[in-house]
Image (cartoon, rainbow, N blue to C red; front, side, top):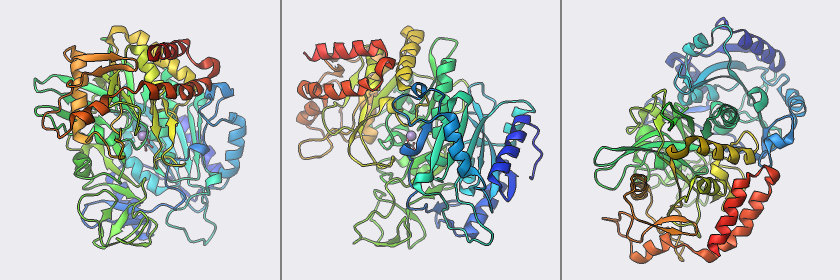
Length: 595
Ligand code: OXD
Ligand code: MN
């Protein structure tokens, strides 16, 4: 071990894990540039990392083809009683799950270094931040954690001898026998992967995968699943939300937190540059919001992360110029294609596709190929500080005051461009019934409709019925200081299957209407599904959009909504008596309004 550790809990945990996993060596990380360079050097030498030609200090990795996304089927919330994990989570008792996993962990780090990664989610030392320690046998995880979290010796200093932390144990599950040659992306087969959470003791155990969401344990595991359970106990919120600041031409600021399921364009919206003159948008975070009620009774949000782990395909100067500028240097890419010029490429990047590339599976790819050159869930990891529109206050320990909540999903039909909730309870109803057509970020079939309440289905660390109640309780506490709630769908299509709304920077037009609703200046019409803009209520100046298309975008198709009711009922039924009575009332009132 390279450093003496003073914290008693950490010392005994390190001893316990090393006795179980039997690594060749133990290394305590300090988050320094020297450490990053050294580990990257090792990975360059063994061929798992590839330097990129035109991006300083940037590298590409290819995963094993079986290890490309989060594995929801292998993700567990392990509580003593199954009811506490609820119907949306895989469950086993802690004893049962730990027994199985200990079998896998036994000797799993043989021939590898066990890295101890002290990190802070949220600015180091901020009262809302949480300290985690990840133990991992993957140097790829260490370099990604350098970007995605705050890693520094200050974290250990802050812990002192008796401070508490969230233990996050990770192994790729690929021990090396004496003399065995390593592969470029070691991992365990799918049926041996486990992403486990023990919210009753704030503990995370992950085994078998090196993919970001399964292996960078500060993100989905700590900052969402474990934090959501802590937040409920402590009366705050941990949400799968981007955070942005919008400033109007008069200089008034609005802060928006928005929940969309994976791969619905959260990163694009978080960094969006408004197409309407005089409006400014700045990014606070693109994936996770931790929110607490401040001394003035308003809800304040921080982004607990330090970087972006974004979906690369579809990202371009057209769709997200600020992301493109964020990944010019000091970035890590995973599962992209590599051009003959030694650069990353993915479907949807600006310009002409390369004539030839080496695809994400390390095979030749040409324009004639029928497969994708980059995996649809290929990712970039980039420091948030490199985003040209990162908000000056993004690291402010007290956070930014939220004015607006947005929920949404990807729906080609039924759901109009925007609607405002009739009340807080109605907003919770909208969030709790949110649905989206599935994409490549989660393993499973693409294109099905899945209910993804508050975009938290894969990330809620306790019974989702109780989670809905927590939202209602937070509304009661916030009372007239509660943010307004909206539901959006940028993805409605016409009968030819073409998107009706241009999206991206033009989404600012929708955000503008929301701000005007907050100020009480925008006209609106009440419909059975919520409050909608009047037909000419949105600022469409300079937009080439026919009035028929606008009508279709805002059309409330009551028949189609009536047809949705059985699915909503079925969705609510799974929560049994944990479904809050107030949501039953909302459903009944919705039915009544639809007639
Ligand atoms: C993500 C996800 O990686 O939601 O952010 O899957
Ligand atoms: Mn996400």
